[in-house]
Image 1 (cartoon, rainbow, N blue to C red):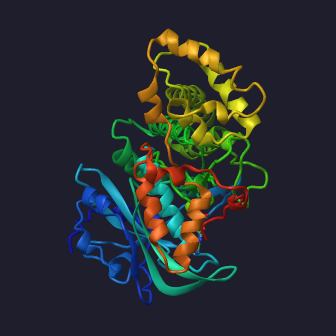
Image 2 (cartoon, rainbow, N blue to C red; image 1 turned 60 degrees about the vertical axis):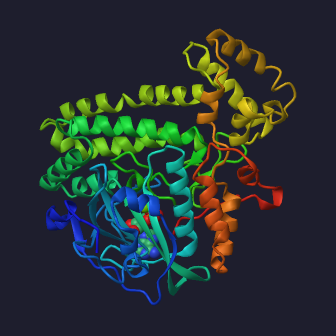
Length: 470
Ligand code: AMP
Ligand code: MG
């Protein structure tokens, strides 16, 4: 066995987790094994057998455990959540010296399962595999998918479905909710240990809780701007689904937009549009305020002073986000210089796209590789925008082509393609799933291979709702 573990989380005090082995399954079979990621982790892919990936065999050096956390779900505080269907096997040091969590998701009940069965069905496992790997290929910080296996067992949801386990790799699984659980219990010593652990792991230059807060604010501002620049809607930005590392985590009801509209929502449980496309930066700030609030006891003995100091750090978010957003969208228009009117130019295009129900990905891609005017079907939409854009490009003196090609993907994981792959997979045919993963591994290439996957859904193919990965 060739995974070299060094399990720093398992060395934290007992109250941080429950030791729990994965519950074995009947007949594990590998659906996908990410050999590139295994190589990056320095793991011999042959060590990653179906038995190991399903949790039937616990590799030497692993110290399986379920992590404790809390969280605000759609604004309501739940004092105890925790890994109800996931087991952290341990931490490996990758070939670049980075510490990476290796976690099995769907691996059976834990002390934090509440009413749940601790299992996952194949659909959400395939979805997370496709979308998290696509996000990585798009250059967006994210947890990764090392493998997907079927269990040979049924999972009961609205109907009987095939069970599956995803192996997730993350810089860590520390969440805003990990801080909240100890803060809400008044466990200041645990909060201090957790803060030290998070700093050592992710932000070694941080001098204390305020610096940690600033670092997370900065990473999250970058992250939300990055994912919005490719039309991604997370769908369930609860505080237990926001990683301290700044990686995207939890691919439940997530989706990429086809037609652009700022208020787009896919999640079946997000009836108020709390996590709608355009609301994501606001929700990030809301979550970061919960992190700030959890850290208060470590910031200053004087509550008012602590609040003032924390608010000061939080207030950096709008400017950081605005700058990151402008940088991303400038690149999408091929702009390599900065002008005060750039924000208005970008917004003018977006509002025309919304009026035309233009495909987000294809309209931007067509700015450099096709006929963008054909996407802006609203009367006069293109003619009233393009001259300003052309004049702007002329002032910078380059056509911005290469910049646009690198900022505007040709393919994204479209919902109808994911659904198609899942349906085939449930019927035992994983060819569409593998094909989709192959195409999404090179999202900025266009060619005959990608053309089909770049097409928006036909009306009857449109996926209007997505569901939590339970
Ligand atoms: P999520 O919606 O995936 O962020 O999960 C929210 C909480 O529900 C977490 O504590 C999960 O561990 C728990 N959970 C979700 N699905 C299950 C399940 N099938 N069995 C046990 N716990 C679950
Ligand atoms: Mg979650």
